[in-house]
Length: 220
Image 1 (tube, rainbow, N blue to C red):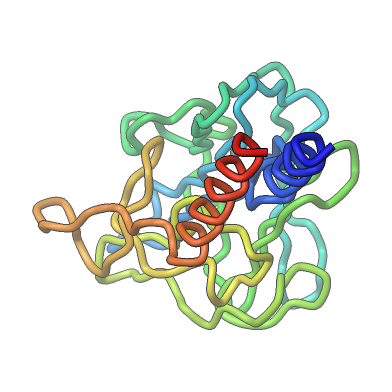
Image 2: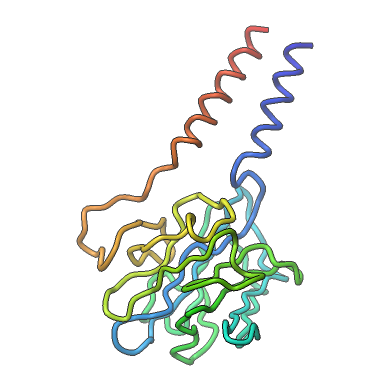
């Protein structure tokens, strides 16, 4: 009985750990570049272990002035491997690892103060990022006041693997990493000696506690 109890508890904890459920999230966005905005992109990340069909998924770009959707991006026809990245852009010659050139227009992402990006699955909002201020309905948790830059090469990036449903703490200034793990820093990181931010101590504590439960279960 003890063995069954701890095995069930361990399974329950795993199922409720961050990112344990297959989920598509907004991972990185670059909406402002030095000079003309010709290399904008949005990167999504599949936090699950299984391949995910993107049929039925949409990205809506929302105007902060009136809450209207000024562009909708249909991701149907694509799939994304577990732990994989999916990059949408307007010019694959300007954005590395671009998977979907969905428009020929430059300047397709508005520059904020504020604006928002909503990710939908069958008309259900599953993730959102409001940048440069508060947008009710799209700001997750606290408002992200951080802005992309038109003088420094950078993006807004999610701290790797973290989705606490709080825009302020989940996103920081990021080196440009479309199609790859984010590197939290500032400015042009093309030659900087920086590494992806490790998982926070809470995740290590969770893993250690779970390992202890498994050991107890085996002893029982």
